[in-house]
Length: 467
Ligand code: ARG
Image (cartoon, rainbow, N blue to C red; front, side, top):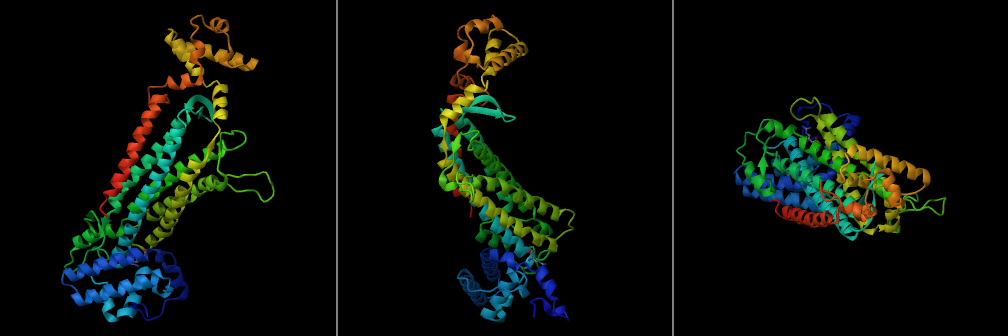
């Protein structure tokens, strides 16, 4: 017999039962579901809707069921559809008909919304912590490599020399924006939907502020119809998660490229690589490859949910049950990727010599020669032309700009003085970039201090969240 079976004359078709049930995946929400029910039933007692004794019995039953689920002793049943009905059925079996009073003034529509808000709220904070650990690993690596110079790339062509620290700190800022995005969506996640009932509120004199207070919600929905049909906070979470994965995939791609024999910039720790079943010499960067690969499924979950929501009429529709698996998978995928990326970055060995050679060899100082000519009075466009011709002739002769003699330089442009060679050394080139949040040593050192402050501030904000 279904808990809602009163108006039915036939049992549910078995295929329908299986098709509509969500228990196979939403059992993941049992902690949130019971926590929400405990707060609800307590509020019902405080409002005089249930007696103290009823509250006691129901709460005791819920706690007992929670222990049994935690111990793996409960078998959920497809006949009871989802986690909400399964727990209610277990409760009635446990404490008798009084268990049926738990659902007073509540619907599964506001209940499932509450569960998802609780679930995503906790995971949002976990992710912020995970991001902070990764940012910390990147800052620490940056600190080790303030004086490691490599070519910065545009179009994957050597562009200008940069400090490795500067390159790594770019990721710190990307993950910093991700952190901000999560803190921002947290406000909307931390909004209480319970009390909305099925759609239009409840006839019982409930006080949902008591539930909000007990569960640490900073706000409540103003509109009951919005409360049960809103999934925006999940779309926002998936959007933020997708960007985090995209950022991780970009970092992963660089680790993969840099650890190839062609680049030879880094070596990943053996503990983070795997071998080939056939080729004995292989050491494959499977972890960053998989992170790169898993980005697709997370962005896929984002597109899936926003597509599910498109054109849905108010309010709750069964379509919304489709919100869960993508969210759960996103959380697992992201936590795994963050947990691996931090130690992978910390453990990578950097071949400074190789990076430096590349920075010296790729004409990455050509802009500096042009800028030098500008300081000597030549318009930038003309300087660009002069240096372009010098690069071409060097390429033909297999030489570098710094190999040219002063005479050869002067032949190309008489404005060039004997201080030119010093301007072309990679450190000099990097340090000349003091402006425009550039890669000069002092700027990079300042950034390391600033990023450490930002990391502390994030921890401070995490300490101060209500729940
Ligand atoms: N299993 C449902 C879900 O995940 C719970 C809400 C069901 N509400 C309803 N009116 N059928 O969305």
